[in-house]
Length: 507
Image (cartoon, rainbow, N blue to C red):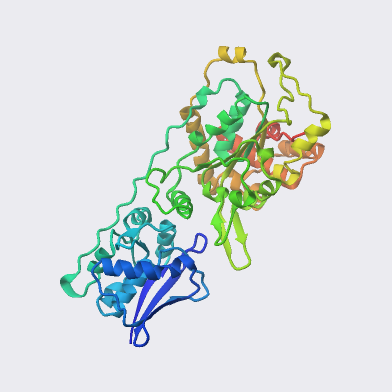
Protein backbone atom coordinates (compact mmCIF):
# COMPACT_ATOMS: atom_id res chain seq x y z
CA UNK A 1 0.00 0.00 0.00
CA UNK A 2 1.36 3.44 -0.99
CA UNK A 3 0.16 6.87 0.07
CA UNK A 4 1.01 10.33 -1.29
CA UNK A 5 -0.19 13.81 -0.30
CA UNK A 6 -0.25 16.75 -2.74
CA UNK A 7 -1.13 20.29 -1.68
CA UNK A 8 -3.72 22.31 -3.58
CA UNK A 9 -6.37 24.95 -2.89
CA UNK A 10 -10.10 25.26 -3.35
CA UNK A 11 -12.13 28.45 -3.83
CA UNK A 12 -14.50 29.70 -1.15
CA UNK A 13 -15.66 33.10 -2.28
CA UNK A 14 -12.50 35.18 -2.55
CA UNK A 15 -10.68 32.93 -0.10
CA UNK A 16 -8.71 29.85 -1.16
CA UNK A 17 -8.37 27.37 1.73
CA UNK A 18 -5.79 24.59 1.58
CA UNK A 19 -6.82 21.18 0.28
CA UNK A 20 -4.79 18.03 0.96
CA UNK A 21 -5.11 15.71 -2.03
CA UNK A 22 -4.44 12.29 -0.51
CA UNK A 23 -3.93 9.41 -2.97
CA UNK A 24 -3.72 5.78 -1.91
CA UNK A 25 -2.79 2.83 -4.13
CA UNK A 26 -3.77 -0.50 -2.60
CA UNK A 27 -4.27 -4.11 -3.64
CA UNK A 28 -7.80 -5.26 -4.28
CA UNK A 29 -10.44 -5.01 -6.94
CA UNK A 30 -9.39 -2.35 -9.47
CA UNK A 31 -11.30 0.90 -8.89
CA UNK A 32 -10.90 4.67 -8.85
CA UNK A 33 -12.80 6.26 -5.95
CA UNK A 34 -12.87 10.00 -5.26
CA UNK A 35 -14.22 11.30 -1.91
CA UNK A 36 -14.23 14.63 -0.04
CA UNK A 37 -17.43 16.55 -0.94
CA UNK A 38 -16.50 16.82 -4.61
CA UNK A 39 -19.01 18.12 -7.15
CA UNK A 40 -19.61 16.64 -10.60
CA UNK A 41 -16.75 18.52 -12.28
CA UNK A 42 -14.26 17.14 -9.76
CA UNK A 43 -15.61 13.57 -10.00
CA UNK A 44 -15.23 13.70 -13.77
CA UNK A 45 -11.49 14.26 -13.26
CA UNK A 46 -11.06 10.47 -13.00
CA UNK A 47 -11.45 10.12 -16.75
CA UNK A 48 -9.37 13.17 -17.57
CA UNK A 49 -6.54 12.06 -15.29
CA UNK A 50 -6.57 8.52 -16.66
CA UNK A 51 -6.34 9.68 -20.29
CA UNK A 52 -3.81 12.44 -19.54
CA UNK A 53 -1.42 10.03 -17.78
CA UNK A 54 -1.58 7.53 -20.61
CA UNK A 55 -1.16 10.16 -23.34
CA UNK A 56 1.82 11.63 -21.44
CA UNK A 57 3.62 8.28 -21.49
CA UNK A 58 2.98 7.12 -17.91
CA UNK A 59 1.55 3.77 -16.91
CA UNK A 60 -1.83 4.07 -15.21
CA UNK A 61 -2.17 1.57 -12.31
CA UNK A 62 -5.18 -0.32 -13.72
CA UNK A 63 -4.64 -3.26 -11.38
CA UNK A 64 -4.75 -1.15 -8.20
CA UNK A 65 -7.50 0.17 -6.00
CA UNK A 66 -7.09 3.97 -6.21
CA UNK A 67 -8.64 6.14 -3.49
CA UNK A 68 -8.42 9.92 -3.68
CA UNK A 69 -9.48 11.97 -0.63
CA UNK A 70 -9.84 15.74 -0.85
CA UNK A 71 -9.45 17.00 2.72
CA UNK A 72 -10.98 18.68 4.63
CA UNK A 73 -14.04 16.61 3.86
CA UNK A 74 -16.57 19.34 4.81
CA UNK A 75 -15.19 21.91 2.33
CA UNK A 76 -17.02 21.84 -1.03
CA UNK A 77 -14.72 21.26 -4.02
CA UNK A 78 -15.60 22.41 -7.53
CA UNK A 79 -14.10 22.83 -11.02
CA UNK A 80 -11.27 20.91 -12.68
CA UNK A 81 -8.46 22.54 -10.68
CA UNK A 82 -7.72 19.26 -8.88
CA UNK A 83 -6.86 17.30 -12.05
CA UNK A 84 -3.14 18.11 -11.84
CA UNK A 85 -2.68 17.33 -8.11
CA UNK A 86 -4.62 14.07 -8.47
CA UNK A 87 -2.43 12.96 -11.39
CA UNK A 88 0.73 13.88 -9.48
CA UNK A 89 -0.55 12.07 -6.39
CA UNK A 90 -1.02 8.87 -8.38
CA UNK A 91 2.53 9.09 -9.75
CA UNK A 92 3.95 9.91 -6.30
CA UNK A 93 2.11 6.98 -4.70
CA UNK A 94 3.61 4.78 -7.41
CA UNK A 95 7.09 5.99 -6.42
CA UNK A 96 7.85 7.89 -9.63
CA UNK A 97 8.13 11.41 -8.14
CA UNK A 98 10.37 12.91 -5.46
CA UNK A 99 8.18 13.34 -2.36
CA UNK A 100 10.46 16.08 -0.95
CA UNK A 101 10.10 18.25 -4.07
CA UNK A 102 6.37 17.56 -4.16
CA UNK A 103 5.95 18.83 -0.58
CA UNK A 104 7.52 22.19 -1.45
CA UNK A 105 4.82 23.15 -3.93
CA UNK A 106 1.09 23.69 -4.36
CA UNK A 107 -0.58 22.64 -7.60
CA UNK A 108 -3.73 23.52 -9.50
CA UNK A 109 -4.68 22.92 -13.11
CA UNK A 110 -7.22 21.26 -15.36
CA UNK A 111 -5.94 18.50 -17.66
CA UNK A 112 -6.93 17.87 -21.23
CA UNK A 113 -7.11 14.28 -22.46
CA UNK A 114 -3.77 14.87 -24.19
CA UNK A 115 -2.07 15.93 -20.96
CA UNK A 116 -2.05 19.67 -21.62
CA UNK A 117 -2.76 22.10 -18.76
CA UNK A 118 -5.74 24.43 -19.07
CA UNK A 119 -6.24 27.66 -17.08
CA UNK A 120 -8.12 27.63 -13.80
CA UNK A 121 -10.53 30.20 -12.43
CA UNK A 122 -9.37 32.33 -9.49
CA UNK A 123 -5.60 31.96 -9.96
CA UNK A 124 -4.91 35.33 -8.35
CA UNK A 125 -7.08 34.43 -5.36
CA UNK A 126 -5.05 31.21 -4.98
CA UNK A 127 -1.81 33.20 -5.03
CA UNK A 128 -3.04 35.75 -2.45
CA UNK A 129 -4.08 32.92 -0.12
CA UNK A 130 -0.78 31.11 -0.64
CA UNK A 131 1.16 34.27 0.26
CA UNK A 132 -0.72 34.54 3.55
CA UNK A 133 0.56 31.11 4.61
CA UNK A 134 3.13 30.79 7.39
CA UNK A 135 5.71 29.38 4.96
CA UNK A 136 4.56 30.09 1.38
CA UNK A 137 5.18 27.22 -1.01
CA UNK A 138 5.99 27.43 -4.68
CA UNK A 139 2.78 27.66 -6.69
CA UNK A 140 2.61 25.62 -9.93
CA UNK A 141 -0.12 26.63 -12.38
CA UNK A 142 -0.96 26.46 -16.08
CA UNK A 143 0.93 29.11 -18.04
CA UNK A 144 -1.95 31.61 -18.50
CA UNK A 145 -3.06 31.31 -14.88
CA UNK A 146 0.53 31.57 -13.65
CA UNK A 147 0.96 34.96 -15.34
CA UNK A 148 -2.04 36.27 -13.40
CA UNK A 149 -0.81 34.75 -10.10
CA UNK A 150 2.66 36.19 -10.64
CA UNK A 151 1.23 39.67 -9.98
CA UNK A 152 1.45 38.82 -6.26
CA UNK A 153 4.84 39.98 -4.97
CA UNK A 154 6.95 37.74 -2.75
CA UNK A 155 5.56 34.45 -4.10
CA UNK A 156 7.38 31.89 -6.26
CA UNK A 157 5.02 31.07 -9.14
CA UNK A 158 5.99 28.50 -11.79
CA UNK A 159 4.33 28.04 -15.17
CA UNK A 160 3.77 24.72 -16.92
CA UNK A 161 2.18 23.80 -20.23
CA UNK A 162 1.79 20.03 -19.85
CA UNK A 163 1.59 17.30 -17.24
CA UNK A 164 4.84 15.83 -18.54
CA UNK A 165 6.63 19.14 -17.92
CA UNK A 166 5.49 19.19 -14.28
CA UNK A 167 6.51 15.57 -13.78
CA UNK A 168 9.96 16.28 -15.24
CA UNK A 169 10.47 18.99 -12.60
CA UNK A 170 9.59 16.59 -9.76
CA UNK A 171 11.74 13.59 -10.71
CA UNK A 172 14.20 12.40 -8.04
CA UNK A 173 17.91 13.16 -8.18
CA UNK A 174 19.46 15.19 -11.00
CA UNK A 175 16.93 14.04 -13.58
CA UNK A 176 14.58 16.93 -12.84
CA UNK A 177 14.07 19.87 -15.23
CA UNK A 178 12.99 22.97 -13.22
CA UNK A 179 9.89 24.82 -14.34
CA UNK A 180 10.31 28.41 -15.58
CA UNK A 181 9.25 31.25 -13.31
CA UNK A 182 6.01 32.88 -14.39
CA UNK A 183 6.25 36.35 -15.92
CA UNK A 184 3.49 38.67 -14.65
CA UNK A 185 1.28 40.64 -16.96
CA UNK A 186 2.57 44.22 -17.29
CA UNK A 187 0.55 46.77 -15.40
CA UNK A 188 -1.56 48.74 -17.84
CA UNK A 189 -1.77 52.51 -17.85
CA UNK A 190 -5.23 53.99 -17.70
CA UNK A 191 -6.89 53.69 -21.09
CA UNK A 192 -7.63 56.94 -22.88
CA UNK A 193 -11.38 57.31 -22.54
CA UNK A 194 -13.81 60.02 -23.63
CA UNK A 195 -12.73 63.53 -22.63
CA UNK A 196 -14.72 65.83 -20.37
CA UNK A 197 -14.10 68.75 -22.72
CA UNK A 198 -16.58 67.17 -25.15
CA UNK A 199 -19.44 67.91 -22.74
CA UNK A 200 -20.56 71.46 -23.47
CA UNK A 201 -22.32 73.46 -20.82
CA UNK A 202 -23.57 71.62 -17.71
CA UNK A 203 -21.16 73.49 -15.42
CA UNK A 204 -22.99 72.39 -12.26
CA UNK A 205 -23.07 68.73 -13.30
CA UNK A 206 -19.37 68.76 -14.24
CA UNK A 207 -18.54 70.35 -10.90
CA UNK A 208 -20.48 67.58 -9.16
CA UNK A 209 -18.58 65.00 -11.21
CA UNK A 210 -15.26 66.51 -10.07
CA UNK A 211 -16.33 66.47 -6.42
CA UNK A 212 -17.53 62.89 -6.74
CA UNK A 213 -14.16 61.85 -8.23
CA UNK A 214 -12.21 63.70 -5.55
CA UNK A 215 -13.92 62.03 -2.60
CA UNK A 216 -15.11 58.74 -4.18
CA UNK A 217 -18.71 59.82 -3.65
CA UNK A 218 -21.78 58.20 -5.20
CA UNK A 219 -23.64 60.37 -7.69
CA UNK A 220 -27.17 60.47 -9.12
CA UNK A 221 -27.80 62.50 -12.29
CA UNK A 222 -31.44 63.46 -12.94
CA UNK A 223 -32.60 65.13 -16.14
CA UNK A 224 -34.53 64.84 -19.41
CA UNK A 225 -33.27 62.64 -22.27
CA UNK A 226 -30.30 63.94 -24.25
CA UNK A 227 -28.97 66.32 -21.60
CA UNK A 228 -25.64 64.50 -21.26
CA UNK A 229 -26.17 62.29 -18.20
CA UNK A 230 -24.57 59.23 -19.80
CA UNK A 231 -21.80 61.37 -21.33
CA UNK A 232 -20.91 62.70 -17.90
CA UNK A 233 -20.97 59.26 -16.27
CA UNK A 234 -18.74 57.77 -18.97
CA UNK A 235 -16.09 60.42 -18.27
CA UNK A 236 -15.83 59.77 -14.53
CA UNK A 237 -13.24 56.93 -14.83
CA UNK A 238 -10.89 59.32 -16.64
CA UNK A 239 -10.90 61.64 -13.62
CA UNK A 240 -10.02 59.02 -11.00
CA UNK A 241 -6.50 58.49 -9.62
CA UNK A 242 -4.60 55.31 -10.46
CA UNK A 243 -5.21 52.19 -8.38
CA UNK A 244 -2.73 51.34 -5.66
CA UNK A 245 -0.94 47.97 -5.90
CA UNK A 246 -3.22 46.34 -3.33
CA UNK A 247 -6.35 47.76 -4.94
CA UNK A 248 -5.21 46.48 -8.35
CA UNK A 249 -4.63 42.99 -6.92
CA UNK A 250 -8.02 42.91 -5.19
CA UNK A 251 -9.81 44.07 -8.34
CA UNK A 252 -8.01 41.55 -10.56
CA UNK A 253 -8.66 38.73 -8.07
CA UNK A 254 -12.41 39.40 -8.18
CA UNK A 255 -12.44 39.55 -11.97
CA UNK A 256 -10.51 36.25 -12.02
CA UNK A 257 -13.33 34.51 -10.16
CA UNK A 258 -15.55 34.83 -13.21
CA UNK A 259 -13.21 33.84 -16.02
CA UNK A 260 -10.27 31.46 -16.25
CA UNK A 261 -8.15 33.52 -18.63
CA UNK A 262 -5.65 36.01 -17.23
CA UNK A 263 -6.35 39.73 -17.45
CA UNK A 264 -3.55 40.78 -19.79
CA UNK A 265 -5.20 43.97 -20.92
CA UNK A 266 -6.89 45.26 -17.77
CA UNK A 267 -4.57 44.67 -14.82
CA UNK A 268 -4.02 47.97 -13.02
CA UNK A 269 -7.02 49.72 -14.57
CA UNK A 270 -10.09 50.71 -12.61
CA UNK A 271 -12.98 48.44 -13.59
CA UNK A 272 -16.09 50.01 -15.11
CA UNK A 273 -19.29 47.99 -15.02
CA UNK A 274 -22.55 49.08 -16.66
CA UNK A 275 -25.20 46.34 -16.32
CA UNK A 276 -28.44 46.63 -18.27
CA UNK A 277 -31.52 47.64 -16.31
CA UNK A 278 -32.98 44.15 -16.76
CA UNK A 279 -30.26 42.71 -14.49
CA UNK A 280 -31.59 40.69 -11.56
CA UNK A 281 -30.64 41.14 -7.92
CA UNK A 282 -28.37 38.08 -8.13
CA UNK A 283 -26.60 39.48 -11.20
CA UNK A 284 -26.10 42.79 -9.43
CA UNK A 285 -24.94 41.74 -5.96
CA UNK A 286 -23.89 38.13 -6.56
CA UNK A 287 -25.26 34.72 -5.73
CA UNK A 288 -25.65 31.26 -7.15
CA UNK A 289 -24.30 27.97 -5.88
CA UNK A 290 -21.44 28.14 -5.24
CA UNK A 291 -21.73 31.89 -4.61
CA UNK A 292 -20.15 34.05 -7.33
CA UNK A 293 -19.49 37.81 -7.22
CA UNK A 294 -21.97 40.14 -8.86
CA UNK A 295 -21.55 43.43 -10.69
CA UNK A 296 -20.96 45.42 -7.50
CA UNK A 297 -17.99 43.23 -6.57
CA UNK A 298 -16.62 43.16 -10.11
CA UNK A 299 -16.69 46.98 -9.91
CA UNK A 300 -14.63 46.93 -6.67
CA UNK A 301 -12.14 49.78 -6.83
CA UNK A 302 -13.89 51.22 -9.89
CA UNK A 303 -17.19 52.57 -11.18
CA UNK A 304 -20.65 51.01 -11.33
CA UNK A 305 -22.89 52.89 -13.76
CA UNK A 306 -26.63 52.28 -13.55
CA UNK A 307 -28.37 53.98 -16.46
CA UNK A 308 -32.16 54.38 -16.21
CA UNK A 309 -31.92 53.52 -12.53
CA UNK A 310 -35.68 53.42 -11.76
CA UNK A 311 -36.09 50.74 -14.44
CA UNK A 312 -34.02 48.25 -12.44
CA UNK A 313 -36.02 45.72 -10.39
CA UNK A 314 -36.88 47.06 -6.96
CA UNK A 315 -35.28 44.06 -5.24
CA UNK A 316 -32.01 44.65 -7.11
CA UNK A 317 -31.87 48.31 -6.10
CA UNK A 318 -32.69 47.63 -2.48
CA UNK A 319 -29.89 45.06 -2.38
CA UNK A 320 -27.43 47.93 -2.96
CA UNK A 321 -28.17 49.52 0.40
CA UNK A 322 -25.83 47.41 2.54
CA UNK A 323 -22.78 47.42 0.22
CA UNK A 324 -23.11 51.19 -0.35
CA UNK A 325 -22.77 51.59 3.40
CA UNK A 326 -20.19 48.91 4.24
CA UNK A 327 -18.27 48.27 1.01
CA UNK A 328 -18.87 44.54 1.41
CA UNK A 329 -21.54 42.00 0.49
CA UNK A 330 -22.24 38.70 2.25
CA UNK A 331 -24.10 36.06 0.23
CA UNK A 332 -25.76 33.43 2.40
CA UNK A 333 -27.17 30.18 1.11
CA UNK A 334 -28.46 27.11 2.93
CA UNK A 335 -25.13 25.27 2.68
CA UNK A 336 -22.57 28.03 2.10
CA UNK A 337 -21.79 31.63 2.87
CA UNK A 338 -19.37 33.86 0.98
CA UNK A 339 -18.26 37.46 1.48
CA UNK A 340 -16.94 39.66 -1.31
CA UNK A 341 -15.56 43.19 -1.19
CA UNK A 342 -17.76 45.72 -2.99
CA UNK A 343 -16.18 49.14 -2.54
CA UNK A 344 -17.46 50.63 -5.79
CA UNK A 345 -18.30 54.18 -6.82
CA UNK A 346 -21.93 54.34 -7.88
CA UNK A 347 -22.95 56.66 -10.71
CA UNK A 348 -26.61 56.51 -11.69
CA UNK A 349 -28.75 58.36 -14.22
CA UNK A 350 -32.50 58.70 -14.50
CA UNK A 351 -35.27 60.74 -16.09
CA UNK A 352 -37.36 62.90 -13.76
CA UNK A 353 -40.64 61.27 -14.90
CA UNK A 354 -41.87 58.38 -17.10
CA UNK A 355 -41.98 60.48 -20.28
CA UNK A 356 -38.69 62.15 -19.34
CA UNK A 357 -39.61 65.77 -20.15
CA UNK A 358 -40.53 67.13 -16.73
CA UNK A 359 -38.67 70.39 -16.21
CA UNK A 360 -37.53 70.69 -19.83
CA UNK A 361 -37.64 74.27 -21.21
CA UNK A 362 -40.43 75.17 -23.60
CA UNK A 363 -37.83 75.99 -26.29
CA UNK A 364 -37.28 72.25 -26.75
CA UNK A 365 -40.84 71.81 -27.91
CA UNK A 366 -41.45 68.94 -25.50
CA UNK A 367 -43.97 69.20 -22.69
CA UNK A 368 -44.40 66.75 -19.85
CA UNK A 369 -47.90 65.29 -19.65
CA UNK A 370 -47.33 63.14 -16.58
CA UNK A 371 -49.65 63.78 -13.66
CA UNK A 372 -48.13 64.61 -10.26
CA UNK A 373 -49.20 61.20 -8.98
CA UNK A 374 -47.46 59.48 -11.93
CA UNK A 375 -44.27 61.46 -11.30
CA UNK A 376 -44.25 60.60 -7.60
CA UNK A 377 -44.92 56.94 -8.36
CA UNK A 378 -42.02 56.85 -10.85
CA UNK A 379 -39.58 58.62 -8.56
CA UNK A 380 -40.78 56.43 -5.69
CA UNK A 381 -39.13 53.44 -7.35
CA UNK A 382 -36.01 54.70 -5.61
CA UNK A 383 -36.71 54.28 -1.91
CA UNK A 384 -35.82 56.89 0.69
CA UNK A 385 -33.21 54.67 2.39
CA UNK A 386 -31.47 54.11 -0.96
CA UNK A 387 -31.47 57.82 -1.86
CA UNK A 388 -30.16 58.56 1.62
CA UNK A 389 -27.04 56.55 0.74
CA UNK A 390 -26.27 58.51 -2.45
CA UNK A 391 -23.93 61.39 -1.64
CA UNK A 392 -24.64 63.72 -4.57
CA UNK A 393 -27.98 64.19 -6.32
CA UNK A 394 -27.72 66.62 -9.22
CA UNK A 395 -30.19 67.94 -11.76
CA UNK A 396 -28.87 67.97 -15.33
CA UNK A 397 -30.71 70.75 -17.14
CA UNK A 398 -31.73 70.62 -20.79
CA UNK A 399 -30.68 73.27 -23.29
CA UNK A 400 -31.69 73.87 -26.94
CA UNK A 401 -29.26 72.39 -29.46
CA UNK A 402 -28.63 75.79 -31.00
CA UNK A 403 -27.28 77.13 -27.73
CA UNK A 404 -24.98 74.11 -27.32
CA UNK A 405 -23.33 74.76 -30.68
CA UNK A 406 -22.35 78.24 -29.54
CA UNK A 407 -20.80 77.09 -26.26
CA UNK A 408 -17.01 76.70 -26.04
CA UNK A 409 -15.33 73.47 -25.00
CA UNK A 410 -14.80 73.00 -21.29
CA UNK A 411 -11.79 71.83 -19.32
CA UNK A 412 -10.04 68.68 -20.46
CA UNK A 413 -10.22 65.55 -18.32
CA UNK A 414 -6.46 65.74 -17.70
CA UNK A 415 -6.79 69.19 -16.08
CA UNK A 416 -9.64 68.11 -13.82
CA UNK A 417 -7.91 64.81 -13.02
CA UNK A 418 -4.86 66.72 -11.77
CA UNK A 419 -7.02 68.61 -9.26
CA UNK A 420 -8.74 65.38 -8.26
CA UNK A 421 -5.38 63.65 -7.71
CA UNK A 422 -4.17 66.50 -5.49
CA UNK A 423 -7.36 66.40 -3.41
CA UNK A 424 -7.22 62.61 -3.09
CA UNK A 425 -3.56 62.82 -2.00
CA UNK A 426 -4.58 65.21 0.80
CA UNK A 427 -7.20 62.73 1.99
CA UNK A 428 -4.82 59.77 1.98
CA UNK A 429 -2.20 61.75 3.90
CA UNK A 430 -4.74 63.02 6.43
CA UNK A 431 -6.91 59.97 7.10
CA UNK A 432 -5.66 57.13 4.87
CA UNK A 433 -8.89 56.74 2.88
CA UNK A 434 -11.19 58.79 0.60
CA UNK A 435 -13.71 61.04 2.28
CA UNK A 436 -16.68 58.91 1.23
CA UNK A 437 -15.33 56.02 3.33
CA UNK A 438 -15.06 58.00 6.56
CA UNK A 439 -16.96 56.32 9.36
CA UNK A 440 -19.20 58.32 11.68
CA UNK A 441 -16.68 58.19 14.54
CA UNK A 442 -14.05 59.94 12.38
CA UNK A 443 -16.26 62.66 10.93
CA UNK A 444 -16.01 64.85 14.03
CA UNK A 445 -12.23 64.72 13.72
CA UNK A 446 -11.75 65.33 10.01
CA UNK A 447 -14.89 67.39 9.29
CA UNK A 448 -14.74 69.73 12.29
CA UNK A 449 -16.87 72.91 12.01
CA UNK A 450 -16.52 76.33 13.56
CA UNK A 451 -19.44 77.83 15.50
CA UNK A 452 -20.92 79.80 12.58
CA UNK A 453 -20.78 76.82 10.23
CA UNK A 454 -22.27 74.55 12.90
CA UNK A 455 -25.26 76.88 13.30
CA UNK A 456 -25.69 76.99 9.53
CA UNK A 457 -25.62 73.21 9.18
CA UNK A 458 -27.99 72.68 12.12
CA UNK A 459 -30.51 75.14 10.69
CA UNK A 460 -30.39 73.55 7.22
CA UNK A 461 -30.71 70.01 8.56
CA UNK A 462 -33.72 70.90 10.71
CA UNK A 463 -35.43 72.79 7.89
CA UNK A 464 -34.90 69.94 5.38
CA UNK A 465 -35.71 67.16 7.84
CA UNK A 466 -32.46 65.29 7.26
CA UNK A 467 -31.50 62.01 8.85
CA UNK A 468 -28.19 61.61 10.62
CA UNK A 469 -26.86 59.65 7.65
CA UNK A 470 -27.72 62.44 5.20
CA UNK A 471 -26.07 65.01 7.47
CA UNK A 472 -22.87 62.96 7.65
CA UNK A 473 -22.81 62.53 3.89
CA UNK A 474 -23.23 66.27 3.40
CA UNK A 475 -20.25 66.91 5.69
CA UNK A 476 -18.12 64.40 3.78
CA UNK A 477 -19.01 66.09 0.50
CA UNK A 478 -18.09 69.45 2.04
CA UNK A 479 -14.76 67.96 3.09
CA UNK A 480 -14.08 66.97 -0.53
CA UNK A 481 -14.98 70.47 -1.72
CA UNK A 482 -12.51 71.90 0.80
CA UNK A 483 -9.82 69.47 -0.38
CA UNK A 484 -10.30 70.56 -3.99
CA UNK A 485 -9.78 74.14 -2.79
CA UNK A 486 -6.70 73.12 -0.78
CA UNK A 487 -8.33 74.30 2.47
CA UNK A 488 -7.42 72.77 5.83
CA UNK A 489 -10.77 73.38 7.52
CA UNK A 490 -14.42 73.50 6.49
CA UNK A 491 -16.08 76.86 5.97
CA UNK A 492 -19.70 77.87 5.51
CA UNK A 493 -19.05 78.25 1.76
CA UNK A 494 -17.93 74.62 1.48
CA UNK A 495 -20.98 73.37 3.36
CA UNK A 496 -23.32 75.63 1.35
CA UNK A 497 -22.06 74.16 -1.92
CA UNK A 498 -22.48 70.66 -0.52
CA UNK A 499 -26.08 71.53 0.44
CA UNK A 500 -26.84 72.48 -3.16
CA UNK A 501 -25.77 68.99 -4.26
CA UNK A 502 -28.23 67.22 -1.94
CA UNK A 503 -31.24 67.39 -4.24
CA UNK A 504 -34.15 65.22 -3.11
CA UNK A 505 -36.38 63.74 -5.82
CA UNK A 506 -39.86 65.14 -5.75
CA UNK A 507 -38.71 68.16 -3.80
